[in-house]
Amino acid sequence: MRLFFPRLLVAALLLSGGLLAEHRTAFARTEAHNGLIAPALWEVKDADTTIYLFGTVHVLKPGVDWFKGGIRRAFDQSDELVLEIIEPDNPNEMASIMGAKAIARDAAALSKRLEPTAREKYQAAMEANGLPWQAFEVFNPWMAGLALSVAPLEKLGYKADQGVEKMLSAAARATGKKIGALETPEQQIGYFAALPMEQQIAFLNSTVEGLNDIEAQFDSLVQHWQAGEPDKLAEEMNESLEATPELAQILLFQRNAHWAQWIKARMGQPGTVFIAVGAGHLAGKNSVQDQLKALGISTARIQE
Image (tube, rainbow, N blue to C red; front, side, top):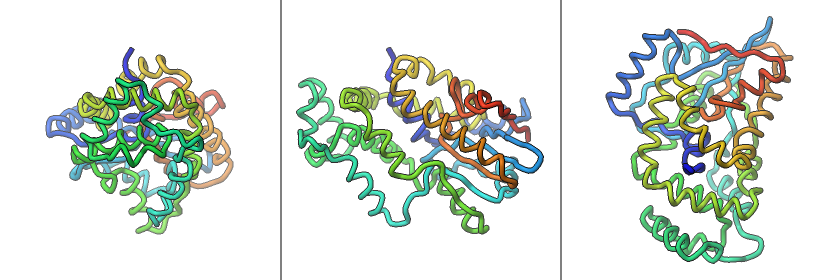
């Protein structure tokens, strides 16, 4: 069984875009070949409302050129930008929100929840990524799992301030666009905090086991993202998602269904909206597009 968590986080939460020159060449070939905007962009439209759906990469290396062409035109035509969440301006506020949900209420030490072999691997992984495992003893396992998912990206040169959401938010503020969100920070963190302890431990152990492959996984998924190949991105995810259906339901499918309901309601108001969410939510079975189809709403991939 392939590990679920690294791929899920790559695709849905931390899909990264550090690309080598040959990846950019492949992207150019794909865009010229099929005439579709890449990275992928979809449209939901009626007589007086247009909603664009764009899959994002939350962290990037500097120099990735994606905000152009049809993507830029769709954004410029939009009255409002809608993200997964709006991060508080004060980083201490987000830390406070996360800390309140991350501290273990039963006061059990995190490392004591792990089997001896898993504990040894976890502590070694934390130390290798510059994270003092002792400081995480008061937290629930999901918190350490997220920290270990982010830390290798920083070492590889990926930066949150280069991510798609950061660039879109800055452009929206510069042009006076309204910025909205599908979830609150509390809700998004709550999805992890609400995981049963058994699944939290599985999350942490799988993240540790997948660290050696994370750079290769990022490269593969990023190529598909930048080339505008959501079907291939989905293929990378499907086996892992099917292997852990409970977690896929909580972290992806349930949220996709909620967002589809939000879009359906928003279609009742005139205007143009640019929605930007993690690319994993717009790929494969039970994607946002699938959930919209179940509600009788069609989406169309946009051509350049």
